[in-house]
Image (cartoon, rainbow over all chains, first blue to last red; front, side):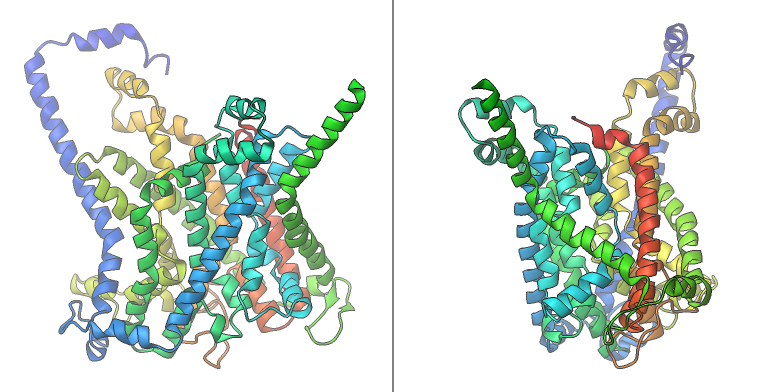
Length: 301
Length: 313
């Protein structure tokens, strides 16, 4: 590396003769580079986009055509989407998923903020240990503790067959959300918090009035992640809700939908589109918060 | 007087800290410590959920390691996924990250296109791939056939099911892409300029400038990838069910791992033992194995990235 930085050679390179010929060659090289990069980009984009395209096309095929290897729908059967919506239960799955994701997100955000704030701004013995435990639980597969938790919700609380065993724990902070918020809150200078304290604010008011407005992007990111993780959850509803169809969510319902329509890929793909759509719509509205959040989890620190 | 206030203040600040931490403290105790201890307890018990638990010593442990036919295949699959899927994801994620930092025209479109599949709900994404790759009517084999390439059975062939899952994992590369993109943009531009003036080619610049700068992020991606593999559940479960045609509650019971145990992973064993075979004790043994593995890799992550924890304090 030190060799690379040698200034003598750098100036020598800059003083090369035949500058115009070099410039032309350099421009040509840049053009070729542009073409190569964008060709690769288009190839990659096809890999990422084509699955969506094929799913969308198949979702519009007739029952008979879906049994063939055809790629283009003929005729377009928009009615498939009506059929999916009219499937008994489909609207219930939607409602349940919205309840699970909505309530879960609200509870997680409210319960995680004070914890993240304490971990970022309070000095106390055991803080590093607490943070390490948060990270450790974040990495833990949910299957590790599911057996006793199931027994608890089933035998003590009699709440299996509902979404409560999934929603209630979110009132007690979520490790990933705490960690992500904490990573953001440490970047807020202590002076702001101290100034609020000097002005006679208690900790709660300092948090609500000063810190929270500054942490809005991180809170948005946490809310989005939590919303999607509830929306996408399959294991939770499979364990706790599967015994009662009235409590199924979209992820779990989609699977049973496929079971009921074994040969109708067209209907299954229409249902698949309808499960993917909300996530993608939300993403377009909240793109910035999202990307910021992903970066925050990995790169900071 | 001063001593008293000081004491009072300390006491108040400790109470305040406790109050702020209380949601997590309660949650940690109730949704982690208690069930973990309970899991250890049940791993030494015979319990089918109906008759009261009875102590059986190490019987469950012996059963899982020597007789339960799914344990070793699941562990082998996990090793395969760690070796192939995790490395493929890191290399591909880095490649896509590099590509996106080089694209000048239409950068926004490409970024969105590359990122979007990551957001597809796992059940829906797996369902989509089960359709795309199905040997009967799937467009992928249709295209492969048209250009005269062999048409694998994908999720229906034990040799191709894990590669098919790997493709699905590569499709959802968006998270790694964003992390690598941010890391690549953080590499000081002067270092590239200096290397270029020194006559370093593209490969040399990558090898001697890019890689050393982003190696912590590569490490982070590898370790979190391994941890995610320990949790790998939904995709193999759905792929197996759809490909075998035996779905959850259609009356028949689905045996995870179709085809030929090639998609078995450890979390599925907890489901199989605990919720299908009602062998609570053995399910808890698997849960503890999973716990030990996940904690080992988490410890590695924390050691490697002590900065992650220490930052700002």
